[in-house]
Image 1 (cartoon, one colour):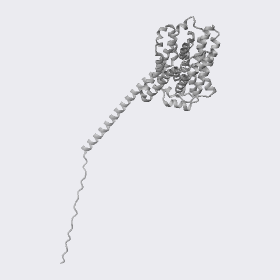
Image 2 (tube, one colour):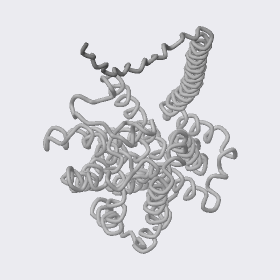
Image 3 (cartoon, rainbow, N blue to C red):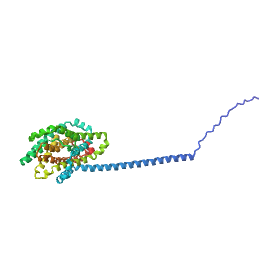
Length: 407
């Protein structure tokens, strides 16, 4: 028998694969933790949203209060004519209540404060824009200043004041010509702000006309009435720098270095300026109240002063706007600058040349008259601008950022 070989066969190893056991307890715990995390996230999100809504509500309430305060201040500023007229009436009825304004340098300090408030709304770019984009309005405004008002003063004086008694008529005629030959008043910058005119252009015109008054005012008065007036050019330039230029530059520096402080103060400066100008006008009237209400008080003087300034406002707007085609804002600015004179300077000049006391009366009345007329005109222009969409004047197509910030 043949033997059959036995082959050795190796048995393959048996591998047992570990089947994962589903742990219901662990899965349930993980799922619960995940749900709790989602729930906590939702709660935190809801709390954050509620806090944001609360902050937004508080912010809106604060903004609403600020807007309400700004509206009240704006409405009070629009009552500029009423404040000036009330101060003038009070000065006539009880002069002792406002004579303190004329003590020392109080008037100069008040005017400097007004100019500083105006400077808070101005930046260097405002003047650069005027000198680059609207430089033609500068010489035009200066020419209108020293042409329209002197001619109007001579014409009105010849028609209404010279027919009076020789002494009275001549003194009043001299005083009216002094008003017409004076430079632009500092109150014109405030009225330009209220009227939403070009404040930077107004400041430039006031500064230039005041400096030119060193030689222009004596020459014009001598030509109109033949009076030889000696004016201290150095004193006039020093007063201009102290009352106009330095305060404006100070306000501009504060606006550049501390813009938040400037923005906060600029909310209140327009109404504060209204009160200061009203006190100044009342002080000038109180100082001359005895002459105004006495027997020497001429009946034709008030109509003459009102007509003089009305012609200045009308001519100062019509000539630049119609004849030379200047913009609406520039025409408004020149109109205000021409119509509002430095009446205090006219009073000082009348006293410095030894003129009769009556020669100071036109300047005293002029301070109140041009403030009332100018503020009424500014209120009308401001109301017209407020009716435009977004406060934009369609006839000009631009709005003053400085005016918008203060008003």
